[in-house]
Length: 213
Length: 114
Image 1 (cartoon, chains in turn red, blue):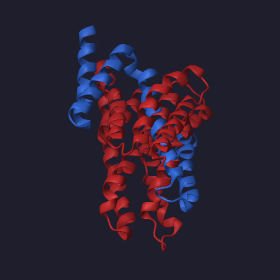
Image 2 (cartoon, one colour):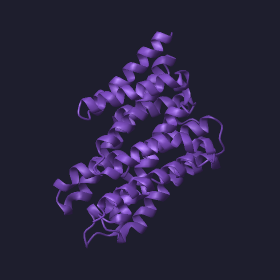
Image 3 (cartoon, helix red, strand yellow):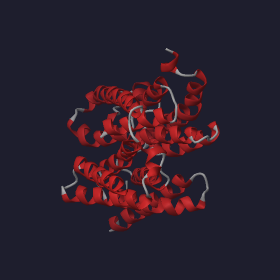
Image 4 (cartoon, each protein chain N blue to C red):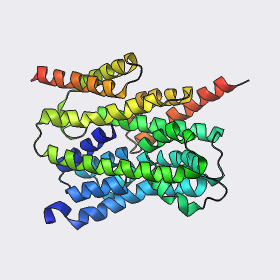
C-alpha cells in the first residue's frame, strides 16, 4: 500500500511539472504521504510558498502525537535524545502503524536499531515507487491517472481503519471523514485542523465516557 | 542532468514549504515528548486528533480532488469509496481487497460514462 501511495505521489509530481529529483527529495526528506500530496497540489495550483507551508504544517501536526506515542516504546534510561533523532524523522503513518504491531515482540534494547532498519527499508521502497509513478505518469491516460490518484485515499483509509485499536480511534476516523466537508464550508484555510481537533476531541470524549467507573 | 534536477529554486521551495513545516512537529515531539507516559490520557487524545486529521486529508482528496481525479464526478468517487469500504469489512479488514474493489468500481464507472 505504501508502494501504491508513492506511485501516486510520483505521478502527481510529474503532472504538476516538478523534476524527478524534486519528487525523490520530497519523499526522502518530508517522508509523509499526506504532507507531500498537499505540498505538490498546493504549489501546483499556484499557491504561495507561505500558503503551502501552512497547509503542510497543519497536516504534519499529526506527526507530533505520533512521535510522542512512538518514542516511549524505544526509550530506556540510557537512551540519549540524539539517538532518537533518526527514529523521529522516520516516524510517519506507515511506520507508526507497524510500531504498534511489531515492537511489542522486539526487545527494548534493540528497538531503535529495528526502527532504523524498518524505516530505511520503507524509504528505499518508496523512492523506487516514486520513480516508477513519475515514469508512468508520462504515459498514462486521464482514466488511469485518476485511478492512481484514487489509490492514495483508499490506501490511507483502510490502513488506518485496520489499525483502530480502541473505540476512540474508530470514532475519530469516521467523524474526521464526516466533519471535513462541513469544516471546508468555513473556508478558514485551516479546515483540516478544525475538523481534526473537533473530531478527535469528541472521540476522546467517547473514550472518557466509556472508561468512567 | 538538468532534466533530472530541474530548477534549484523549486528545491529551495521544497525545503521552506515542505521539509521545515513538516519536520518541526517531529522534532517538537522528540523534544517535548520525553516526560509523557505511553498509556496516558493525553496520548489517547493526541492519537484521536492525529487519526481525525488524517481522516480529514483523506476526505479532502475526495471532496476537493487534485489533478486527473477531478475528472471523475463526485458521486462516482463516493460510490467507489463506499464499495471499497463494504469489501474491506466483508473480508475482515483486508486492505488489499478494499483498495482493489474501490478502484474497480471507479474505473468501471468512468469507463461506462465514457
